[in-house]
Length: 222
Ligand SMILES: [Zn+2]
Image 1 (tube, protein in one colour):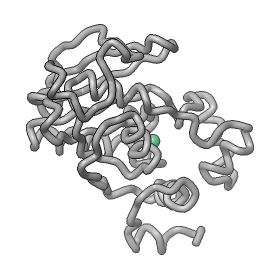
Image 2 (cartoon, protein in one colour):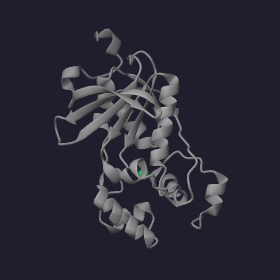
Image 3 (cartoon, rainbow, N blue to C red):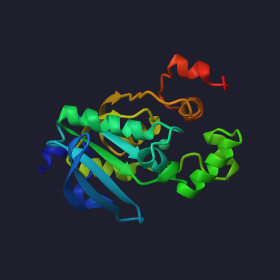
Image 4 (cartoon, helix red, strand yellow):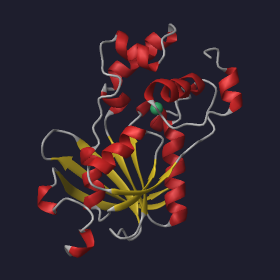
């Protein structure tokens, strides 16, 4: 990649704190993708990038940072909408023929799967997502997105159309030097148990969600 094409992004490749380990083809139910494995040079964190098409810095490209949610992504949990968001994003990128997803392996907004199950146990007793983390003495959100932004850059991107409802991710991508040309909100039909979780996300965590009236009115927590 020549210097001119990356002029609007602030890094040089040598400054990246992540490195690509391997890339392979990954045919999926939602289309054919490439999968790349990255590791952090500064921590023991590993990342996955799923991408498709010719990625060029001057072409505004669909991207998503998806945070791992074992319960939602793998088990089809109805307590959140993560799995549906991931699958919907893969469909959108497949239809577009170009795009990238960085899969960040920071389960439960960085608290880990065991603490997440502890938090779910507290939610069974009436706490919401934020209150449960506070009761466990854990940060509500301990994720950092800088390295996810670096991966998008390493894949060849600079101008991005971000599929996200999370203002912290948008801010982090921008601070990292990527140019956000569009935010695409993603709303999937959520099952009833997710309604309260989504309401907490919107009201306590600043997510940019338009909750559907039927979701809102059915919630006992108005
Ligand atoms: Zn989830």
